[in-house]
Image (cartoon, rainbow, N blue to C red):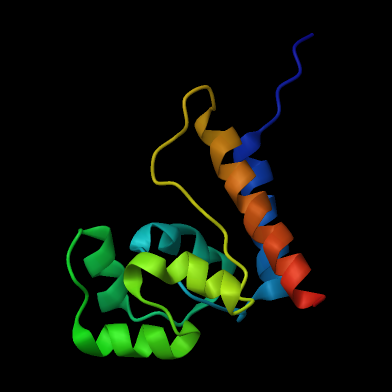
Length: 125
């Protein structure tokens, strides 16, 4: 008998579990790629969309979006993760391409678990 794990169900269960506990938690994004998970997780994205979109496209973000983002974590685009860490703002790296040797499901579940663990850690600090 072959045992098969329905990773799609596991993934959606993970989304529902995080959303149930952390819906509305404010987060910042440096690119739009994480919106595909932030929205179903119910996380409140504070970073202006214009900032995210410009960075994702390799462009300079609009000045007002930079000011708003800097005010959120006192960061400059190229230093945002380092500045966020220095300001004790948790950072989770997500990738937009699937790593070699991982299935799509493994990749998504790993990133989802990293987000969950960061949310858990930040809610207890």
